Length: 179
Image 1: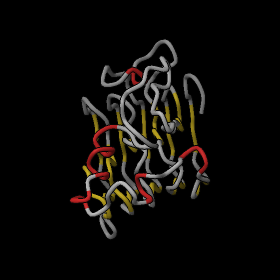
Image 2 (image 1 turned 180 degrees about the vertical axis):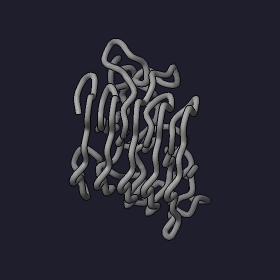
Image 3 (image 1 turned 90 degrees about the vertical axis):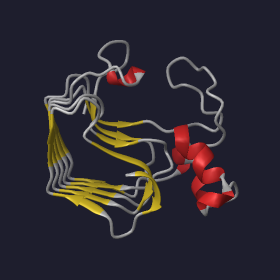
Image 4 (image 1 turned 135 degrees about the horizontal axis):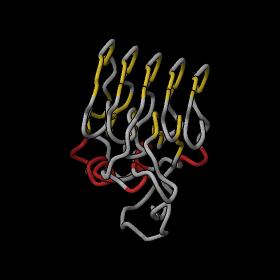
């Protein structure tokens, strides 16, 4: 899903995705989608990936991620320093994560939230985007033509102050660094 906005009623269910060179499933600028019962095996980079911090209301339920592999897509995908591929990469806690299983990842689930000044999480370098939204979503959803605009709550989110919608019965096995 790429910059779809409200995707209520949209879903990816029962898919098998293996040996991808860049991720398994990406939610990028999408709200209210369902990822359910998918299997991700030997894909490079963070596998179930909420990309820009703007993604809310999505349900990530009953998915299996096996052996996410290192990648050079972004610094956190690489083994070394503080990186390594995560089974589930979460940039916004206002989503539901239930009954997922991750096996053999460097990190089972990695929660990382944008800050108001959007500094790089490791170097502190300013990346030039405003608010609590990363990447392409920052410009896209701030544009009034998107149907949202700069004053809309989706671009004004403070992820570090937002409670997790649901994070229940997830299982992390054989994670190299931490669950």
